[in-house]
Image (tube, rainbow, N blue to C red; front, top):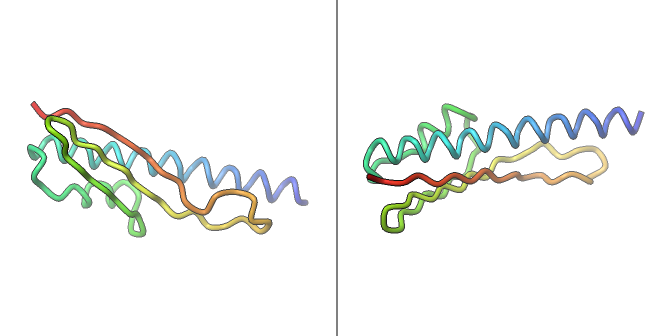
Length: 92
């Protein structure tokens, strides 16, 4: 039973991690498409949903995006409760 719960929790963690990376990539694409000046959080929220914390910074020609997504805690408290996705976009 414990192994089954751990596998289900790990599967959920991997799914949220992939979604969080997709949200960071979507936010970076939106920021690059808008020239670095637009709010790209809408693109990230469309990819993952509400509850995501997004940090977008511009340094020169680079747009750095860090997305932090919450994960429901597993019953044993072994797995992390927040995962990060990172993406970088280049402004042209």
